[in-house]
Length: 107
Length: 128
Image (cartoon, rainbow over all chains, first blue to last red; front, side):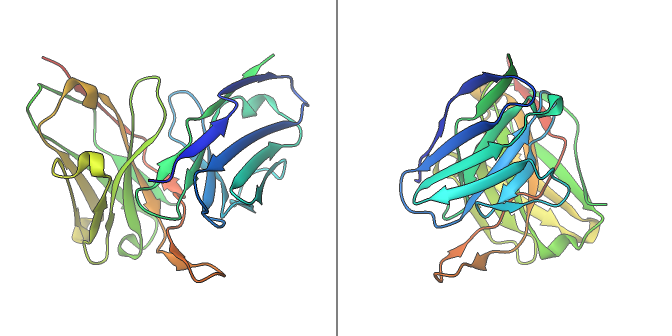
C-alpha cells in the first residue's frame, strides 16, 4: 500500500497568514494526489485534484504543487472559514490512501 | 445540483450486520463510481472500497475483504454498503463519495480520479 505522510499534524495560524501543508508519498504517484477540507461535523470537501487543479467554486487562495513525491497545499492568505482539517489522498493505485490530516487552528 | 443522501444512524450489536444506503441525484448516476470512506470518532479518513455503478465491479481494501459487500440499484440511483460481523471498533461515520471514471495520465498510467461529491455520512454505533 502507498503510505501518505502528512505534516504537520496541526498548526496554529492567524487570519492573513500564508499556510503550507505537506504530504509525502512512499512511492511515485505522478500527479494522482487530491486535497480535501473537512470542518467539524461535516463531510470532506474536494479542494484540489490532480496535484494542482482547483476544484470549481474553491477560492483561488488555495493552491497545490508537486515536487517528485512531495506535494504541497498552500493557503495564500488564511481566512476565518479556512480553520479546518485538511487531508491529502493518493489515487494512483488501490487501495486509495489518505494522509493523517492537518488541523489548522486559530492562533 | 449533485446530491448524495445517505441513510440514517444505526445502532447494532457486535456480530450483527448493517446495510447503509446512498442515493444520488442531479447527475448521471451510472456514469460514476461510488466509494465508501469511514471515519472513527476523532480519527482520520479510511478508504473501504468502491463499486463501478455501471457494471457492478468492486474493489476493496484488504482490511475489509470478506466483510464488506457493495451493491447498487441503478433503477433508483442508489448504492449500498453492507458490513458484516460488526465489532465495536467499526463504530464510525461512514461516507459515500462520487468518483468520475478512471483516466490515463500523460505517462500512460491508469489511475483513479477524485471524490468530488460526498454524502452527509451515516453514524454507525456498534455496542453491546
